[in-house]
Image (cartoon, rainbow over all chains, first blue to last red; front, side, top):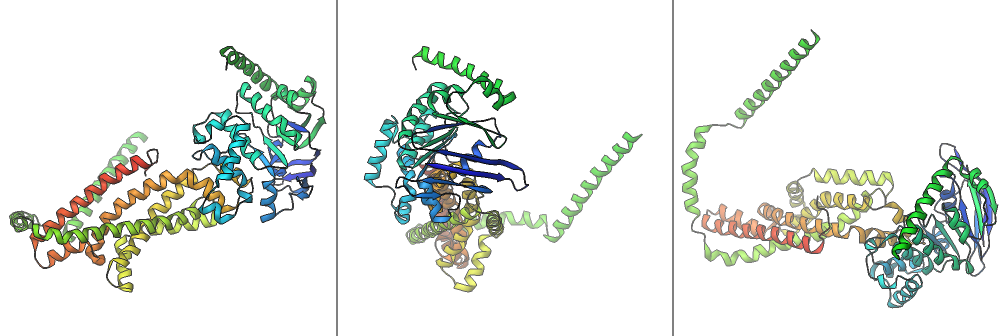
Length: 270
Length: 264
């Protein structure tokens, strides 16, 4: 369970970007966050895994052993151990390009690893076998020893998901994980993410309304630092218009482009 | 009218620049005691001297081999020590690893070191540690830091901070982020620049050898001192071969080990 309690965030100049965000996500839920750019979606995500400290409010999650962990008040070692339990997938994949896919996956357990061993020895065979199994689950085991820099966007995002899964996290966060992918790959990535919701709550930021409706169980919309909608996965066009305003036409344009591309790709049998 | 004034001003500027440079050149010539007659007289003397230097003393060649190896080892040792020290200076000098104050302080130290010729470091060290290869090793190791520290630091700064943040987001410690996020990304550049520096250090260790660090440089210096010019020629030939091979070898190695690395 992840419990976001009234978080606010001010910049150093005193501009309030988040104005009190609260929501609770239970295991089994796949929450999609929508909102125009600059609304505070990414910042909310950063507060959820402690990369950014909110000005007020707190974020608490329960781990697999049912301990409540307050990520907002964690520091130092506590914060590291808490982060170990949070899987994060980023828009830009953010993998180490010159390391192999399997090494990138094993990075997911660094937080649990003996410091000396991790610095001077590296990973064990057992860890490698486990990492390979996870890569198999996301169907890129055959690329395990390729440097990540030589993979395609979809493949990289699979490796990133594998790394997050390898962490054996208690919650999963995804910040625009499919924004850089074509619709075909985007759908495949969502198909990988969806079953994870049975084991842990998932919170993701997405821009594609049709994908969010298809895969998420609940849609939260953030606008100007406030939650303006929190409900089921059926979102109407007029709601979308309220949330996105002038940006809506842009999103719809992208969607038609996307579907045109995916049509062509499916025609090619990709 | 205004345009004419502008043209006058431009002409005046040109005259002033030419006059200024001419004056400086004249002053420099006087201060350097430039005397072309000495130059013309020197040419036959020089040719005569070259006659003294030939043929090379081939018997001394065997005696040169160990000093030559010494020079290479001196360069090798200093490059290794220097590269390791440079790595830590580079971490301090990279904006995506270190806080601004530490970065600026480290960059300041590196810039200071770069403006300090190795020979001055060696002369200072010799007065403290005496003659011998060891002060040479220290002087050249320090000499590496200014160049390699900055190049390594620049290479580290090219790493996307988001990648480092994503490793931190799995709960990794700072040193783990460096080990898995930074080192793999900068390794080719590290290796290439270190090999390049090794080549520089070979030339430098010949020079520093003459000033007291031993090796082939000292052989050359010593031969001149005892007026054994043919022996000096042998030393020069060995140095030529040494420098030439190290240059070729370093190019080859860099191409082989780190073909995609950027050399600066």
